[in-house]
Image 1 (cartoon, helix red, strand yellow):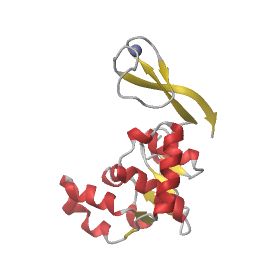
Image 2 (image 1 turned 30 degrees about the vertical axis):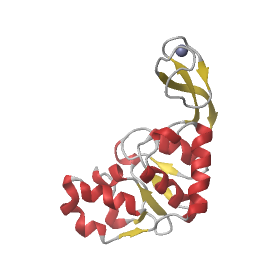
Image 3 (image 1 turned 180 degrees about the vertical axis):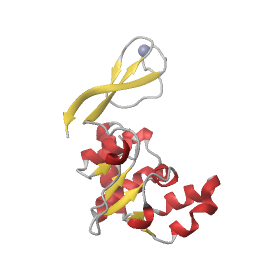
Image 4 (image 1 turned 120 degrees about the vertical axis):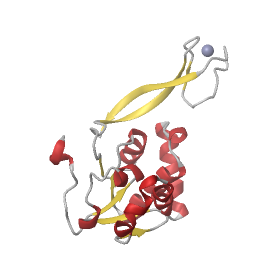
Length: 171
Ligand SMILES: [Zn+2]
C-alpha cells in the first residue's frame, strides 16, 4: 500500500474518517476537509492522544446525522448482516457520509460493507479495502445449522453461532 493508499487531497471532497483513521495519524487532517459525528470526537477524547489532537480538532467539523439517514443505515446494515458488528459511532459515521455525500475513511470491514451497500465512497487508511460487498450468513459451530439472521445461540443445539460470507456481490 504505502503512499498510494492515502486519500487524495481535494477541496471539493469531504472526508468522514473514523476514530482509528484519525488516531493512526496516517491521514493529513490539516489539509483536507473533514466532517465527523460527535461520537468520534468523544472516542478521541477518551483516548491517550486526546491532548495531542487539540490543534487538529479545530479543523474538523462536527455534524450529527439526521434520523432519516440513520434509519437508512440501520436498514442497510440489517440487510448485509453487519448490524451487530457496528457501534453507534460507526453508524453515525455512515449516516453523516450518506447525508453530506462524503468519503468515508475506515479500515473497518463491516463499516465498509454497509457503505458499499449504500453506494457511499470509502477508503481504507492502512489495510486493503474489501473488494466486494459481503452478505453474511450465520452458522452453528455445533450442528452446522444455518441462519439468515443473527441469533445468539443455535435454536437446535444451543451452540455458539459464527458468521460466514453468504455471497459476494461486485461493488
Ligand atoms: Zn446447532
